[in-house]
Image (tube, rainbow over all chains, first blue to last red; front, side, top):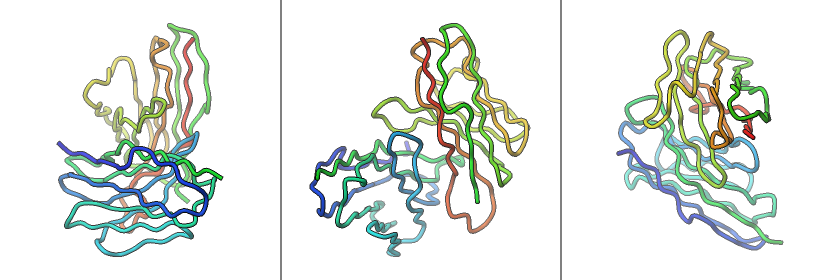
Length: 111
Length: 118
């Protein structure tokens, strides 16, 4: 059965800290891995990763994929209270054109 | 580009009534649209996948007679929650995809519809 597992489930840090969020997967016919940020609305797209070892970066956020070990990490440096959200990892693949979502990591950044 | 809208953004209805939620791709033709449901503090749960002009494919455990999906055109899909009950209260999110090369995202998400059944 295809699955996506995120860790930790929740995390509390202080402003300025660096955090690393993990996503591991077992999905047949892997196409891509995506990271989303969700506050009190629909998910906001962050990154889509398809190739191993190539870091994608946007401001203080970066992400990388390891297709051999079947995982990805999302790094956030110099965290701010506005980074508080649920971060979702999803993998495109499987038997159909679906996205398989992980349970998410709830990040709380305290002032 | 690749904007998806949903209407309404929020709806409150009485138990026993039906509610229709629209999902539109505004600037592209969506070959496939997806409907998700999200409970508080939970991840997105795929309900069904629909392709234009054909019947939707429902995920296991989703009642197709309860959640009617129509994908009438390449830019519009609708989800109708029939005979709604309080347990149907949830956040419903649609997404759309298209099969061009070099797509920067797998699916483009709408802003979601919060349904409350009283």
